[in-house]
Image (cartoon, rainbow over all chains, first blue to last red; front, side, top):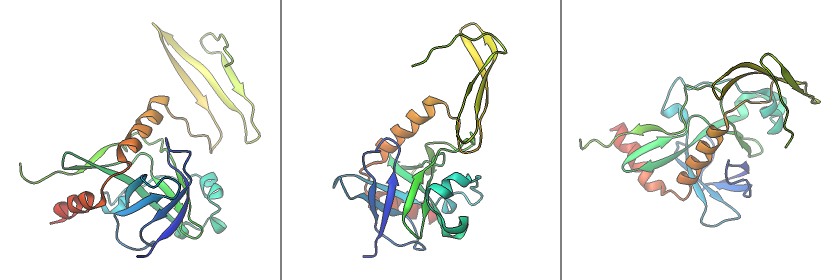
Length: 129
Length: 78
């Protein structure tokens, strides 16, 4: 199985910095993000653009700097959002996406100031209603 | 923690290498104050409750089973 090493912090889990993503960039999400330091810790992330085509926000230059994005080249940046299922409904956190430098694997979970994106946005409703 | 008293229209300034942050008391009304904040880029201003909400969502999202999620996405795409 292909995998990508990622280094960064997820809000509330700052003690863990090393993750392994069970995929490579360019594959179709969802992906599993596994902590390298805590065997039982994992997250599932998706590309938000599969959920909301016009998802957009302004990326602060200092984030690109923190992630050491070469020449601030946006083509080397990936955006992933954490999802969770609850009672057959999938929720996505569009308010605090993970910004990833696809070249070195550095990532940061940022918080958008745009109030229109929620922390727990329902995506999928089960069709047995 | 530093505690300061300020009246309406008074402000405080936090000096920083990347620029100053200025916080003004815009309005005071029955136990509620409105603040105006000027900050340089790179200082996101967020309500503390939002950080708690995100932490909570992250906690609820940890340890999820990818197969359940994959199935929910497939159901939606059908």
